[in-house]
Every structure is written in C-alpha cells, then in structure tokens.
Image (tube, rainbow, N blue to C red; front, side, top):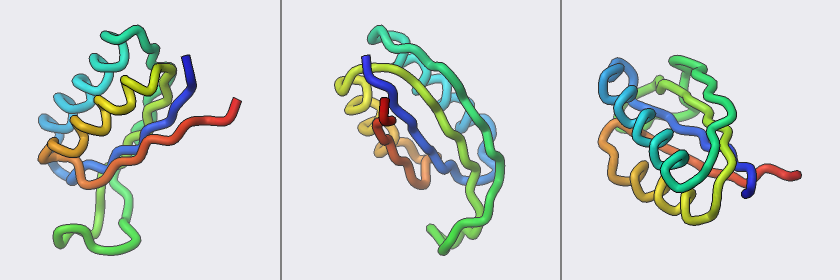
Length: 94
C-alpha cells in the first residue's frame, strides 16, 4: 500500500452534493482495501483565478493508503462529478 494525498475543490454552497461525493470517495478507498487516515476540510478559500465565474471554492484534503487502481477510480469519479471544480492526487514520499 502506498500513501496518497488527494485535494478536491468543490463548488461553494453545495453541501449536500459535497457530502455525497466525499462519502463516495471514502467508499471507493475502503472498498478496494485502502485506508483513509485523515480528512481535512479547509472550508471556503479564495481561488487564485476565476473558475466558471467562481472566486471561491471549498477545499478538502484526503490522506489515504491504497493502490494505483484506487487512485485511477478516484480520478475518474472526480472528473465526472458536477460538484468538483478541480482535484489532484499525489503520492506522498515515504
């Protein structure tokens, strides 16, 4: 198992959709044998540039252990989710 960090920026003011997508991410990680070690919700932060006419986004950081297969599925789900502005998954140094 490798350690990863996923940053997700959600559209602001979509609490219900955000909670559903976050639970789906956690489910994908644990379903395939991974482990969610920490979820940090930074809240609304100002963006460096406008994205779809929004100047703020809701930031969430997910630290987890998993396989490359899990990261591929998380990436796929984040790309098709309407409530996700941007996302990034990076492998942590050990």
